[in-house]
Every structure is written in structure tokens, then in C-alpha cells.
Length: 227
Ligand code: GAR
Image (cartoon, rainbow, N blue to C red; front, side):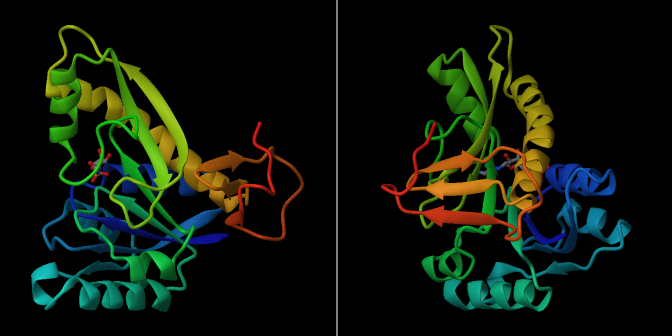
């Protein structure tokens, strides 16, 4: 059973999807804490309703990012979190934090990375950029987080078509449906110890007998062959 900490700033629909997957037994784990930098985030209400500790820590209450990151790590460690899931978390985590939880932080992005990602690309801005570009496909990406915004190794992606009649809202809704399947799936694979980071790539190991190590194994590029 993995212990999951969710970081959210908004509505928390991905949190909801992960909670549902845990309740259905699809993920061998449970959400033990939800943290938001936005005290008004609906994600916090969802957590409270589910009886999960919900912590609001407004970033403006901290003098700088390092202090914010240190407090966040302290909270997550106090709940003995194995995996940190960012779900529309509107704070960039610094290198120190990423290093503390190396290979144990996931993020979801509402497009097919490495396109339409990076600083300032979140929510509706992403869908607008996709529509403006004339792309015929978009989708969502679950990836491990590193110091670069939306930059870490990709775990899973789902593709959705962009229709001629799409607006930001219709495209966002189609992608959200896929996000709610994709994120729980990535968390499940992590819980089953089936994710292996090989350089920039994430290998999904086949299902097998229960593994002793839960989470990820990380090997350098030369050691593993993808395929
Ligand atoms: C999700 O659509 C996620 O992909 C996006 O924020 C939304 C959070 O929704 N994340 C980004 O744009 C990150 N660059 P939720 O609070 O309902 O889970």
C-alpha cells in the first residue's frame, strides 16, 4: 500500500479520480494528505469530505520559495508519503524539493508534452495554444517532475482529437475525461513497482508477481534496453 500526498490548487477533479480508484481497489494505496497553496481550493473540500487531512499553506505567508518548499516537505514527510501527485498545483517546486522526492513526484499536464508545456502553460492557456496552432490532436501527459516545469520523464499519455468546432471549453472537457483515467493508471503502476526510469524514458514493466520494491527503479541509460 503506497501512501499518496496530493498537491492541488483548484477544483480537484484529478484528486477525485485518484480517490475513486483507491476506493475501487484499483490502486494499492491511499491518499493520506492533500495540500493546497490556495485556501479556497475545492480540492481541500473534497479531501475533508473524504476524511483526509487537508492542509492549506498560502505561498504568500512564506518569505521565499525555499521556505515554502521546506514546509511542504516537512508536511509530506510527517504523513510518510511515498508518492507526491501534483494535480494542477500552481507552484513551481525548487530543485531541493525535487531532489528530496526524486522519482516520487508525478504531475499531470493537459496536452501532449513536450509540446504546449513549460512556464505559464496551464489550464485554458494550454487549450488556447493548441487551438491557435491548428493541431489536430491534443491529450494529456502524466510525467515525473524534475526542476524544469513540465520537463520530467513521461510516464503515460492519452491522445484526443481536436475537432473543427472545438472551443477551449469543449476541448478541455474531452481532455479532462482522459486525465481522470490516465492519472489513476500511472499511480497504480507506481504502486505496483512497474515504473523504471531509464534516462529520459520511463519503461512500464509487465505485470508480474508482487515486487518487493514499490515505486520506481532508476537505472542509467546504458544499463537498460527499452523496447
Ligand atoms: C488539470 O487539467 C491539469 O492537467 C492542469 O490543471 C488541471 C487541474 O484540475 N494542470 C496544468 O495545467 C499544469 N500545467 P483539477 O484540480 O480538477 O484536478
